[in-house]
Length: 272
Image (cartoon, rainbow, N blue to C red; front, side, top):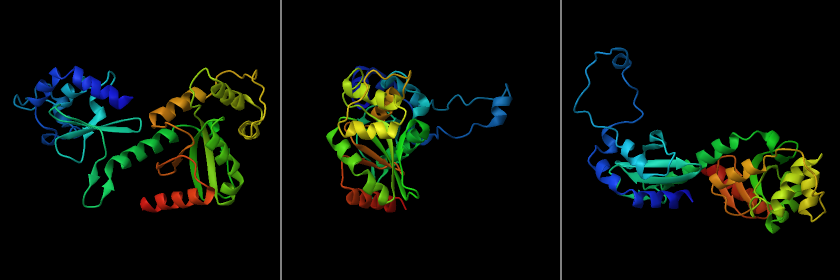
C-alpha cells in the first residue's frame, strides 16, 4: 500500500531527482541539530550564502502527498534517509535516485535495524489506544501481555480464544483489538460492533467465537472498530490473529499456548 504508492510517486516525479541530486548529501548536515538561538534573535545576523539547502525539501516531493520534511531522518547508512509511516519503514537516497524497500542489518551485531524501528512504532501506536477500548482477558498476576488483532469469524482466532484459559494459567494477558478481515459493511464487521455494544463484551465475544447467535440489531452509537481496523492496517496486519508483544515484536498467526509462551520469552530475551 504505502510502499507501492511511494514507488509510483518516485517514478512519476523522477524529474525532481535531478534537483535533489544537485544538493548536499545527508551526512553533511544534521537535520535535527538545534539552531543557534542568537541567530534567530538577531535580525541582522549574517547568513552564509554558501550554506547547502536541506535536500529533504526536494525529496518529499517524490513521496506521497502529506509526507513532511521531518518524516525523513538520517538512516544508519550515510547518504540515505529513512521514512517511517505507521510501522512501515523505507529508505531514500539523499540524491533522490534510489528508493529502498527492505531490511537494513548491522553486520557487526547481525541486528535487524529496520525491524527495531518497526517494533518501536508498533509499541507507540498501540500505547495510544486506551485499554478501555480493548477487550482484556487477564490472569490475576500476569507475567506477559500480548495485543491481538482479532476477527470474530476467523478460524484460528477462534482456536486461540479457545486456549484462553490455558494462556491465562501460563501468565499471559490478552488484549483484543478488532480487525474484521472482510472490511467495512460486512457481517464480520457488524459482529464486532455488536460485541462492542453488548453489556458484557468479554462474554459476548466468547459466545460469538464459539458460533453462538448474536443480536445483530444491537446498536450503541460509535464504536472503535473502524479505528482499530485502521490501526491494524498501519501496523501491517494482513491476517488474523495478529499478535504484538509488549516490545512490539510481531507474531503472525496461531500458535499453541506453550509454543506461543516460548516465542514471547525468546523475543523478550532478544530485547535485553
